[in-house]
Length: 497
Image 1 (spheres, rainbow, N blue to C red):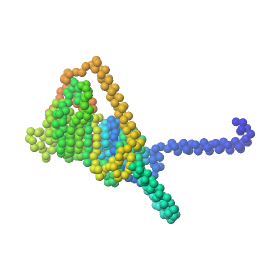
Image 2 (image 1 turned 180 degrees about the vertical axis):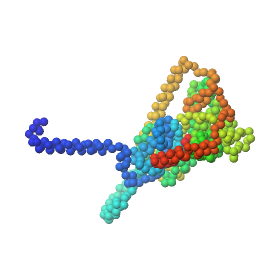
Image 3 (image 1 turned 60 degrees about the horizontal axis):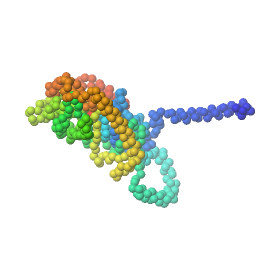
Image 4 (image 1 turned 90 degrees about the vertical axis):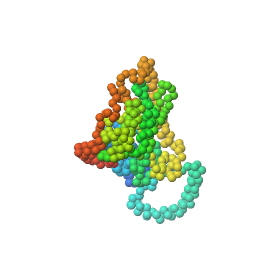
């Protein structure tokens, strides 16, 4: 303070004013850094950058999300598309204000709440690192400099060619090509939560649709047999029943009817339906893990989960294998030629299985349409996988999630062993309760089992469609269409699995 004692009043005022200016500048910098992500995205000029259409292949944990598809109404859990869209906006790969329609978003197949995917695919237009777009004003300025640039290029051309040859020789010696595109996998996986992982991407043509260009969809449903006192599963019986699903059939009794879609044709082609053992039992106390693999071109709403429910009934001996033929005999214009097979115009009422074990395993495309790649190289040649940072980070995050899951499984197994010291395993049928396998560790309890063909029947397809059209359906559809339009969202497809 001694240094200010000799200052005049005017000098002190001038010094205080200088300090105020410095303080205000600091506040302005801090305010700039506090701009919200949404405002920063709006400040980013997407028109200054080139775009390309790509497909993204990704996996996600279905139990953490309210399904794949973005919803215009609030949901208890986030949707996969909602989280993915937000990550793409934060990475400035798409424009938030343009919405889903603005980036030409398409998905391969919807999955319901709790259902996971190991190979879901979407297609959309994103910002790329190709040469930025040039405005007309910039183009005129560029023309004025052409003459100067040509003179400069004449002097530098020789040196540039020499450096280019040296660099090309260096790359050929290393056997690599440099990446020339944005590292889409790495950029997005850094923003996305560990429950969603981008696995690969591919450049696609402008008219490519992840939904309509998909040639097949492969679903897996994982399950175990039940322990006493429940009836165990007879796997060979289930395999025999699954084989009868192959071919083109009417699957209206293996799905949930939805009047809002006004579907009248329920024929779908199944190319493969098999049951196999995934993890063999290593000891008498361990239960083997099985998987039901179903491959087809397209599926109805909840078709896979309804099919598995019937397979469980067959496997536990509650229904005969022939029940598959009866449930498929639903179209009066194409009845089963075997007169012993009953015709079912209406579906017997039964519950589908849980969605937790269901996985959209793969979405198949023609190689000419999609050539998957990682961040290694953006070219026409086949990409040889290498240990780039994005690969290491991807595997590390997925292996960490697997390790945590195994630890939880081990803890639960030890808890069961502790309980077994005081509570022995009962015999099959130890009580009078009927236990029906519901998948995902769930069991449904009944006093007695009622065969499917003796149960009450649901409405026909015509009844469902007419009820929707003559009721509140049109008003609900108009309201939903308005919400979808306001959200910039594409129309929904046939229905989720």
